[in-house]
Length: 490
Image (cartoon, rainbow, N blue to C red; front, side):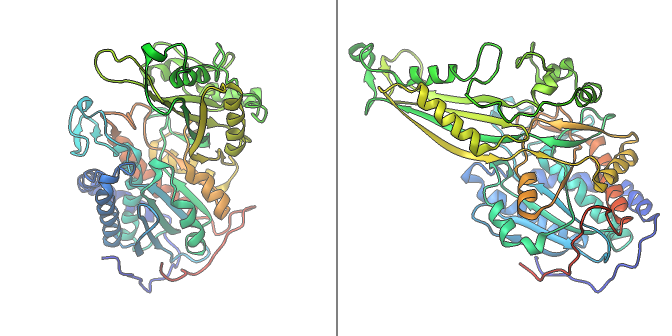
């Protein structure tokens, strides 16, 4: 199923109207594309739960088989230390750029199941939406690019650019196997530019290119006291309660205005110009929109910043969970022997996760009394990422959105984190174009996740036009291109 189906076809210049045939092909085969996307969603490819390892393998195998069937070459399911990577390529466009299409086929857990209107892995269409876990994040957005590849290969027999696909199965757990993969296969997967679609745009009629994403640092803080749980009647007031200490440390992390109180936390945070902030106000989401999408009555955060600014250009610290003590029904007179909190930092350009971790450890040491012991464990980290608005591939993306969505895109900043963006930059020196097709209310990571089907079809069109526009550029002025022959198989 994964054999190399290399052909001898050579790139001889594509018609400027080749994308017209590709678009017509997509229009004709929409029902099939939707059914294929449903098949992809049916795999319960939850990377964070070991019991779903076979679902991840099955999903990777299905993707690889599909890429073979549409005409991609050197299709391979690559084993890693964790879940597999699916690779494919079609490189028959000499003197044209090479584009790496990145996506992830793993998904978040579906819990709580009782809040789903329909089973999470039995996709269903209601109105203009396809419901199912992974419909938006990221299977629907990934598959839009796969459909665009098929449209070119089935109508023109070739692509306007060289294309490599890298679809991983660990994005939702921080991509732990990806750095080693990128290092091992660096020569194989090197490209001039990467493109990914794993983020929302403000609205169906408001496309946007994401120009920056925050970095992330996930930590676990554990406080330990006595060697075992103690009777709170016999020892209450005499033995320090780890849950109380943990609560006090957590309470020390923010001031009443919402600023993080860790010493040095803001030292490297950039101040945006008034011009940049004015652009964000004109093109970004309003406070009311953000509150509506969040289902919240009021906002929270640093004074002097809009909610959009607070969630994109300002760093943040969130408490994701606390565990400790008795959780069952009724009372239990106990002092727990330990308590644990999970924390999530979102970091902006110039903030380094390792530096922030050191500052946090220093803060914990300062606020931990001698009566208990505190332990900090890092779960994962990712650096912030930014893309140059003047990059020629950004201009190609702008044109692609204009054709695909019928309107010129704006630039937006995201508060989320995609570890792969910084990894591609640091490991391969590769910039990434972030073209989202999702919507803010798609309920990603939540029950009843959905994907707006008109955006699915517009995303296919935008992908077709992006490759066509990139194919018009034999040289990207000011940016080095790296042309090479396919370097064998994995």
